[in-house]
Length: 261
Ligand code: PGA
Image (tube, rainbow, N blue to C red; front, side, top):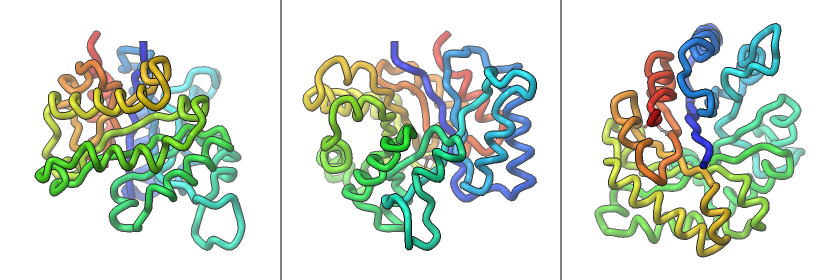
């Protein structure tokens, strides 16, 4: 069986106090309300709150009881040096960050991030024992032109398929159709499943059956407490990368509890 994962991408939201309140509430309520302990919950706040997120993620008296894992939303493609404003994978690792989103469509679109940069960021993360959550997905016009497979195929090939099999097997992939992100227009379960199955098939062609079978592929794009259940019930959808609905505990916990029992 594949891992079940729900990751919250807070993007650029929450002040320090708001972040503390939400992290605190999440820890307490996940402890009591998470129905399936096999679901791995990841919270990706802004960098500034990583230490606090880490402090609050586990039981004070029993550090083995972890309510959520801590991730971030981006990393530098460089290892260190004169890159003002950047944060390196080694720094993240030294702060016990376990996961990092890479190649989010907002980074690709507004910051011009390329597949080659995605490849370098993934490499930095893997060298520092951080699990990359690598995003791919088509824009609305790609889908209208029937080019979704071509676009996603290129993102996979140029961003990821240079990896050695063992390294590739450490990734989490997130399919996020750009037209669904923050728009309230979730992909239908069938639309999402079609792409997830296709991605898994591409992985199988590149790396073989066993790796394709174990790689978690998450869905992202207006996934919420109402839509998560049907999405997560699809055979190739292993959970979600959640933006807006990760900003309040009720919605996020409902999504964590949306896998088939
Ligand atoms: P959304 O964002 O859930 O707000 O659509 C998802 C994402 O961008 O990761």
